[in-house]
Length: 249
Image 1 (cartoon, helix red, strand yellow):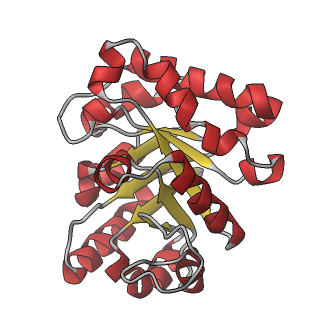
Image 2 (cartoon, helix red, strand yellow):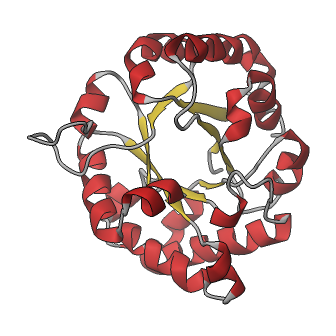
């Protein structure tokens, strides 16, 4: 059985006091979620150290939203995978569409990032997805296949540590959502593309859906056989919504 995972990407939201209150609210409601569902939260960098112990005690995974492509050095403002691991961060979101679009991250950049994340024991949550014009031009499969090259070059051992997240870029923060059929179609494509390199191991890879997932549509999306959970944006900023999504399983 593949892991069921619901991860909350807070993006650049919450002061520390707000983030601490949100974590307390999530922990208070965690008992409503089945034990076989893994909860993960990805607060801003400023929150990680102070929230790590509380989250670990509650059995909730702590993720960073990004890491540097370098291990250390004169890179002002960057945060390395080694630093994250040293404060008990377990996961790291890599390749999010906002990082690709706003900060010019490419396959070459992400190859370095995923390698250094794995070196220091972080579990990458690797994001792939197409823009609206790419979907309308019927190029979405080609786009995603190219993005997956960052993973298909990994060793089988390292690949087994990775989580994939499909995010239709046209549905992020727009209120639009891929239909359950569209989500399943892409998740199936991703799994088959990974299986072409890694064989049966791809059957064990969790593939999450990200893109305006909320309590009202999570059940239909998560019911699809190749959807193993969600990478939740806006809805993860409200404990009631985040837990409601996780309770779908």
